[in-house]
Length: 289
Image 1 (cartoon, helix red, strand yellow):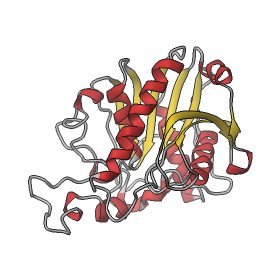
Image 2 (image 1 turned 180 degrees about the horizontal axis):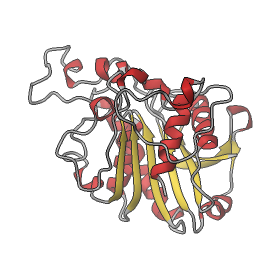
Image 3 (image 1 turned 60 degrees about the horizontal axis):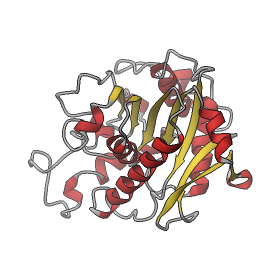
Image 4 (image 1 turned 135 degrees about the vertical axis):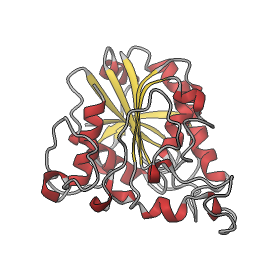
């Protein structure tokens, strides 16, 4: 079963917890607490991947999507996976750039960083993967860590496209390699993210305060030296915001190497049901070693 670090105080909405709960399960029905010693044994000497969901995701959905993605990953025998749950549905309303929404993600990152430095130091390395507003959670975590991070993958990141060179420049410098998955077909990020939403549409592209999301068009140039391209999913795949961690019955198995192909490339697995989450898991598995 998937092991989770749970930062939630309530199953739906609510505030950030003051402590990190250690749990395991594959669905809310079998979700239960886990002893700290069991966590330490699971991560000791292993290359650890901590992955988290985005905004507007309750505990039940977070458990389901991350445990499903865990099953699709091929990280190798020396790896361990931890799902991270946080109250990304606590403030969610309207656009993504309202001042209070990133605050929860930033505080979640600080809480997780303190937990990592006390409890996960026996792992061989630590890497992160995120979806949507979870990008801010993991970048805030890295910012608050005193140690280096092996790898970072931001999928459909609901955060400014210059975040790696501006707000989280120091955090990005702590990472060995940074990967991004972005889609220009992502309607959530193209319609709801830009800072112009905060001002009721008064700002538009070209204004110095306006930024696209890194998960829509990718990182703003210039890229940091530790950034690994390519990152832009082919447009005719019509990759939407919910596709990255979607759940389909019997998704295809996509073993590494799985790469971001050039525009016009055919869909993986012939477009069979579940190819989207199989693609993101295969991409992460390919970049992880």
